[in-house]
Amino acid sequence: MTEHPTNGLDEIVHQRHRLGILTIAAEAKRTEFGYLRETLGLTAGNLSRHLTVLEDAGLVEVEKGYAGRRPRTWVRITRRGRSALAAELDVLAGLVRLRSALAPAQPPASG
Amino acid sequence: MTEHPTNGLDEIVHQRHRLGILTIAAEAKRTEFGYLRETLGLTAGNLSRHLTVLEDAGLVEVEKGYAGRRPRTWVRITRRGRSALAAELDVLAGLVRLRSALAPAQPPASG
Image (tube, rainbow over the protein chains, first blue to last red):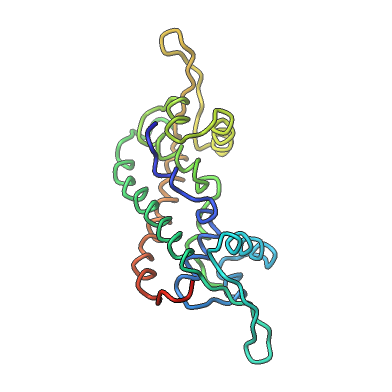
């Protein structure tokens, strides 16, 4: 069997909203729930579900805290999360390199 | 609201097996069902379901034919499929460019 690069993708990390969460979380020491929700255009429930998937896989930690008196939920990427994101981006880089091979090959008639 | 690059990803194209199907189909004029199945490590049923999603979205065409006397199913990417794949790979290229910004920022203590 030939190996295709997409076989190396992990659905937990590859799903687009979770990929968004991880890339944002990787940019800062911790990230606030509301910021993630707005940046990714998710409902609170939807974001919570994706965070649970990531937390169960050990890729993020979710902490309750306060900003002054206001309760806040913080998301922190773990070392495992950082490694998983790096592995995902390595596979994506390989796919992107295919792009130059794909673009010019075909006449415009078939679609 | 800030826009995050993952907001521009289309689940139909981004799902890893469908992304695999499209990148393989984009490399050739037509691709045989069994080749896709083996290369992507999918069952026939699973591959069929993903092909239906792609066909319903107008991204591939599926044709029955023969190789000699043996029945064969061929998959052909459409122009719309090619455009959708190019758009996906553009977003992925943007994410991959973030990688250099992500890698060195953080101390190894937090995970």
